[in-house]
Length: 608
Image (cartoon, rainbow, N blue to C red; front, side, top):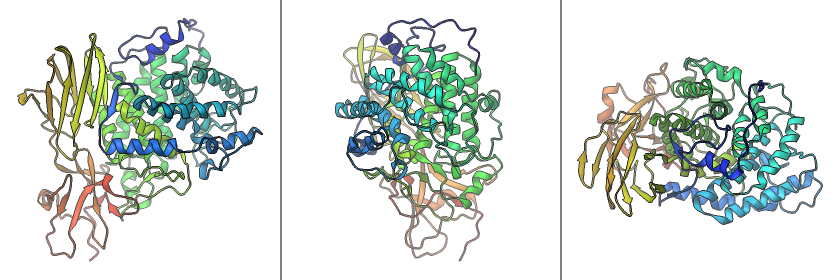
């Protein structure tokens, strides 16, 4: 446990002042609770609207599914355990006893999505669930949850306060904190097996993800109890490995998702303490993950484990069908990347967000009303399938809602100088700048097309800086203003920065050239590759006895693919006659139970 003897008591300004300081971009904290100033800020689910697109459809479907779960069903297990009348139907799978494992995630997702879309009914549902669950607490604040579930509850209650404007959530959180502080086992054992839930109420599985949301709770009201309990669960021995280098050899048994998610706790430890070690740990962890752990899809964690950087990632394509937890893994990656963009202002951290937007969560099967959930990404060399997890309502059913809600929070960032465009997604963003309401509308079919147009709605001319992320894989990004080319200087992984006096009706056209390219799974398997077009992983349709794409050498690659469309669709031209025409198309277009290949072994001899 950390020594706090050198800390002075925090000041106690009005709570609303504190909350404003936490979520208002460019504004310093109102007290000593926050020790660092962000460089860029997300819009915190306020002012960003999705326009018609596959992402808007995905969000709308998620809203209908999660908004349609009967409250009595979700509360039944809690009420039963509290000895209260428990109407409703029993839930299944991971929620058979109670839905504690995803309850906080549902509150969080409903609060965030309700804020982003102005959906009062979704907020009302979240508040009704909160009140129904609160009625099951006894006088001791016993939440009847493991560390695993309680950590998610903390997130949900913090989000109810921030995004649903419900102050009572923090009072209830303080009650359960007292119970948790008395109850949780502090032995801090590593979760090195599949007992991720922990052994009963005192179980400490995934304890190292606890600090993030406890620190967020501290930043809201300045209550040192939240900060001090967060300090108990800092994962110093793990974070310290990354403080000076990204050349790490991890513990093979480390659970992948939670050992990425823990760096969001390190990020919040940095926000509260200002200690640069925590920020360096997050940056180095990001680089380590990109270099050694991620498939071309952005997913990571075959068999839910981090891989030693010795070629194990490439070998995993032969050994496993569950290569990456998609909703959970995307959620952890979105958060870490967003924290790093906020703290450093660097555009390169947006690349992981974009990759997972198209090939991770954006390629996932939607959660079903009965709790069937897409869990694992399947990238086998022998061909894969998109399938639902075998138990209903697993962890990924909770992070699915949170992650699609987060679409509204990763497209744009802002600072005192203006706007930064991170993703090319049909959307509209509105904010106040120098006393004027500014709206930027982004119209695009990217990545089905190479261009995105930004239209400015202004009352009068205004000067601000507009930055556009240059994807790390990109070469030759070009910009036109009202039809005239602009001289821009943006390196891959950086920003194109345009600062000028903008006029009402200005239109900016951005072109991001894309070409197919091969991406090896790791340095030890240079000919075990995915084929990627821009940010999009391509899959080969494997229906009806088709062989996987094969090449004699890389020089053969460009002439073997013919773009046929519509959108992103390539016909594979074979050097020998074949009965079937084969195509490559975006991984996100493959439906449930339709076989595909996304990785190809160019060294594999033909079977016939």
